[in-house]
Image 1 (cartoon, rainbow, N blue to C red):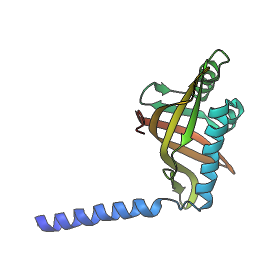
Image 2: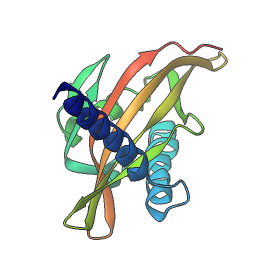
Image 3: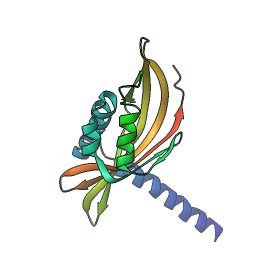
Image 4: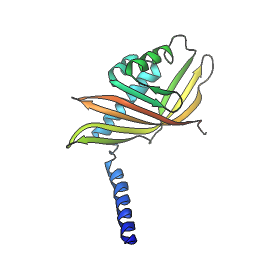
Length: 170
């Protein structure tokens, strides 16, 4: 009886691992490319250049952000206002830049009765900082997970998990 339970557990775990690998979108799929473009708009344009309009477009009204170093940001409004007053403030003497770690991005579609309604996007990103009059420095390497939801033909980010921040190793 014990060996049957062991066999069933092994089969179950194997199926789970296989299903996870098969569920990941190909890097050439339309969904992967779309969400990689949204990631670029969010960070390469929004974050790196302080184009607040990108955040207003891409972030859902009921947005939540969970960060392992700075806690919870419970709304779109608080996130955008904090970005304006902090990272993107004219009084800020440093500039931050985010770079996606090449090859780290993966996308997992979410379906409801066969209809695509969202996706989970995860990966790693590197952050850099430039203090006024100094050269750019590596600041941290972290993992992220984004929940994107599709409404009509529009994608918006609803939840963000940013975790495992650590100093980069050269």
